[in-house]
Structure formats: structure tokens, C-alpha cells
Image 1: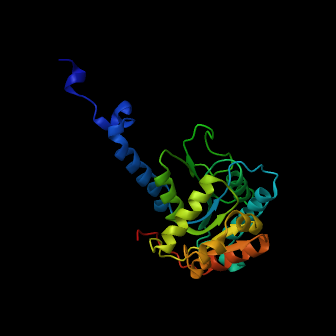
Image 2 (image 1 turned 90 degrees about the horizontal axis):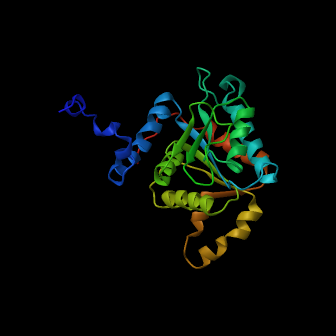
Image 3 (image 1 turned 45 degrees about the horizontal axis):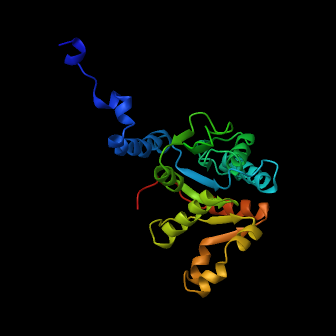
Length: 252
């Protein structure tokens, strides 16, 4: 018997096994625990999430709006409270822009926070056609997920507001999942959902038809705010965020 046989490595050191079907639950658990260690435990407890298409060019109006909103929000977030900002009393940044870390609307939003000199977060996902995370995300605040479920959890758990820009299947999935969680009481905190580019959202979804056919109630529309005005969006965000007491996120 060799020395290696007498002192075998524990299974968590076996990369091949960790990537196996049998170890899936361990991989998912890692994606649940690691962000908490690197975000919540280090004081990154409050995010403003920007959802939107990865396919929108950075010079298109929606991307330019995302950059401007993220920049103005982040400038406020790093400004001392004595000067009307949203920083903590010790001067540290409390509110952080958070995106899916990819190109398009996501990159534009991270870029805006970067231009403001603020920390910002990217929650990436392993995809064959979107390698890596964008360059504007703060060092040590970029994450790469394998499982959409775990990524979605970390979008919503520390979120204090969500902006949804025009997008495709992924954006719609993110929007309607959050709305479902709020509608069913799984999210109990006040979580404003702002839909940017009113014309896009009014044309894309017949909200009135959903009400007329009883699929949603009229009150459900109060969960959404439509806007195409940067000043209005920033005002809504700052008024909401500025009124929130700081508490550590908790499970429902």
C-alpha cells in the first residue's frame, strides 16, 4: 500500500467529483454561501438592481439612460448624509448598483457606477455566448454563477429597488419572477419595480388585458412604475432609499 493510499484526499479536494452530477447540491450550496461571505458579511447589504438586455449597444438611448441613472444614484450613495447623500455615518457606501455582469444594459449600468467612483456589483452566469464579466465591476465584487436559481436569489435578497430596462426572455423572466414573489408575499419588504421606457413596456405587454380577463387585479399594477424620465427615476430611487433604515437582510 502506497503513502497516497494511506492518506487519501477528502472528496471536496476532488475537482472531478465536485463537477459530477452527484455533487450538484454541494455546488449549489457553494453559490448560496459564498456571496453571503463576500457581500453580506462585509456590509454590502443594500443593492439597486438593474435588469435589461445584453444585446443593447452602449450608444443606444436605453443604455445611455442606464449609465446616467446608475451614475447619479452612485454619486448620491457615496456622498455624506450631512451633504444630502446616502452614505453611512462612517462615510462608507451603503447602496450599490448590482447587475447581471454582462454586456448591454448591464455593462452600461456598471459603467455609470464606476464613473461616479462608487463600488458596484456584478452577478454573472456561465453561458456559452457571454464569457466573463464586464470591466466596470469593482474588484472582488464580481461573481460567476452556474445556477440561475442561486443567481436570482442574490439579485433579490439584498435588493432595495429594481429597475428593468427593455430586454428579451432573460429580462422578462427576471421581472415576472420578482413580481410573482411580491404578489404571493414571498417578498415582504417594500421593493419598488421601475420599468424604464414606458412605450416599450406598454407595447410589449397588454397590461389592461390581464386585468380585464382577471389574470391580475387592478391593485397588482401598483407594484409597477413606468417611466421614461431620468430625473423622475432618480427622484423615486433617492426618496425611497433615503427613507430606509439599515437592517441586515433576512430570510422570509
